[in-house]
Structure formats: C-alpha cells, structure tokens
Length: 288
Image (cartoon, rainbow, N blue to C red):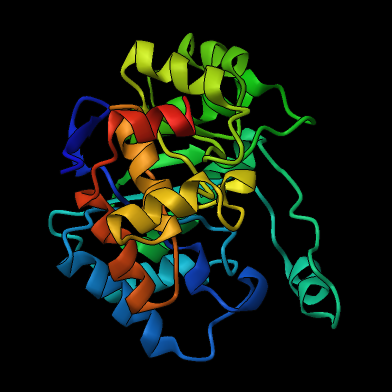
C-alpha cells in the first residue's frame, strides 16, 4: 500500500492523487465533448479512494475548476489543490484551436494583484471559502519571486488559502520562498524519464515537504520495447504506467504522484499501482 502523507502537517491524503487537467477539452482548452464523462471520472476517482485532486485556473481556462466543483463539491474528505499565475485569455484559447497548432503561450503573471484576483476567482469556481492548497503555477520573470510568494503569504494570513505550494521551481527558489512563508508542497516534472528535479525532491525530503510529480507516467528510454520497464511490467502482469507510478511511490515517502486521464479504465489501472510492489532488484535496475 502506498500509505498517506500529511501535506503541511495537516492535510492527510493518500499518496496517489489525480491530476484533473486532461478532463478539459482538446489541448486543455474549453469543455470536453462529453461533459458527463469528465464528471464520471472524477466521481469514480473518489470511489476508488483518491482524496487529493490537482487543478488550475489555466486548465480550460476555468473549465477544470468548474468540473471539480460540479462533480465533488462539498469535497467531504477530499483535498483540492489549485494553481494561479498563468494567464489564458481569449487570444491563447483561439490560438490553441487553430488547425495544426500544437501549443500556444500561457503568459506568466505572478504580480500580487493578479494572483489575488486569480485566487478570488478560483474560490468562487470551487465554491469554497478557503482553498486547501494554492500553488504558484510558475515563477514570473517579470515579477520578483519574493513578491509573488509574499502575495500567497498574505492570502494565507487572510484565511483564503490554508497552505501554500510552488510549482516548477528550483532549490534556490524553494529556499527563498521558505524564508517568506511555510511551503507545504512543490510540484515539478519528475518521472522515470526526466529526473532533472532530483535535487528539488531531495530538498523536499529533508524538510518534510510534499513533492507532487507532474507528468508522472513518462518513462523515457527505459520504456523502450524490450527495455527494463517493459520487462518489470511483464513480470508483475502490470502496465508500464503502473510500474512508473510504483517507482515514484516507492522511491520516496514524500511523493504524491498526480496522474491524469479522461478514461475511467485508465484511472482504475493507475489507481491499482498502489498495490504494486517492486523488488529491491527492480528498483536498483530503474535507479534513483
């Protein structure tokens, strides 16, 4: 069993969460064609014991938070985390819908005024008086990092957020933020195929901070046909994704992977990774 973790020393959650981003429309834009499916996925996640959800105002934009509220409010026994600090207005939405357009910029805005407006809007969409965990989506090079974090500290002092989190940060930025306000979580890309944030994970381990690996299912070169991940998956009659999640869960006691999907079947497969135990030899083969 993956066990639980106390985010911020207070919010006890099971160590396999759910990333809600994929429930928005194509390219994380607008509503999905099948709205009822997204609601069904969220409710099935809750039935399976998932009690930590990660979303953001940029997903949709706004759509994802509305989906979470429609499916699960009043969140009995559920911790909902959201993020602010990226702008996605009409221009970005239109660009992402252009044929052949793979991506469009999500401009950063970490100014205190914007973060406070974004938080207020997320409170309304999620239908809560205080957000469990509010994360700075990405540092804004146009705004001093200390000012962005300072705004989150003020929101916490005002009772609008319970805990402060960061996303896409370095160890130096984490240390700077911790001098301003208590940091409950860090969300960086981290998986079998991309371990660039290993030093950030180690810092979180030292300080007892939750580490939320995004894009957790990527196994990179290790997942090549006939490679180590595939061999381990075959040995356990598991999927490659389940092996990737089990590696994250067993590799550190502070990780809370947040795999996302718009499929109930894939959701159930991902959640089953909580029961998969890799051997010491298998962990050594995959490394950490």
